[in-house]
Length: 405
Image (cartoon, rainbow, N blue to C red):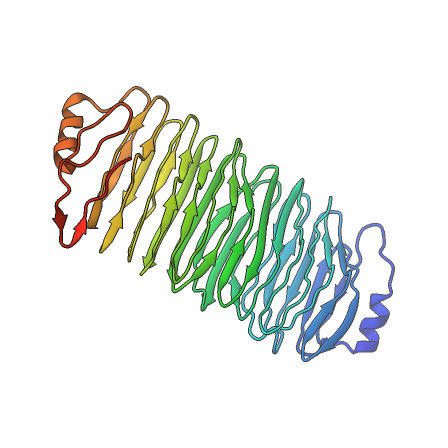
């Protein structure tokens, strides 16, 4: 059944009743917009080459507001059965964006409390969602500033306020950032701030992911990615702060990153190819403190598969493979309830396999035998002030061993 534009216009003018006002748009030139359930108020400004302009559009419903975009040509924006639900959940499904020039300016999707989405500009997949806010029970704010030549695929992404917020990035070409089934769960607020994307240079500035129970981040693949997440902060019950400084050709700099959660914080890195991952002074802090310090990674293929950093009871770290890795975890500290300290001095071309290693700190720490084994393995003398240095400065394969300061 295909309704005419005149009929849609008449239906669009209908006032909402106490219970339900149902709108069914079948054919809007290359748009097939389906809106159904309670009440939806739409303001279309212009449609040109399926450039959908929803200016100050407001989708308001007591219980549920469902928005279904089927096909947008030269926008190719697919929001398949996306549901913007205020009181219970807010689900957004972006399938594909190709040469999209979608301008949704100051659009607002409001459910029980408020769900506000602000799209500024899209030009050749330059998605500008400036100060966009997805608000469920309390607040879920997403801020996209600039995307240039980006093919951002957010597949089955779900922004849920009261219980959970799940964000799923499927594919980014020339970014190739895969955050597979990443889940950002927040009881109070989940705020994501994208500053700029230029040739797959993703800037997430001062982004904050806040969760009462858990904050899980899953990176699948980064290839030649120039991901810039600057001063991003992932905050749980107390604080989970992640600071990405710079990424150039998959040079991921996580400076002073802190993953802090009341119960657990799970970080899953699957594959990094030719990645120069710099996690400088990163701190993974659970109930008391779990601190991990990565100094430098060059040409690192760091595989942290299903790694789990859990503070109160257990801290489990699983390294699958490190090839041509110069992983320096200097003065890294994994601290659970009391203290479990692990000190890596230098690893060059290391194939470090810590398979399902568990650092549990309820009462357990390193005994003298274990300390002697570690010291003999890595050729250093421990010190209470952490002033240990290698016993020799001789060159190995043309590279001088670093000192611990």
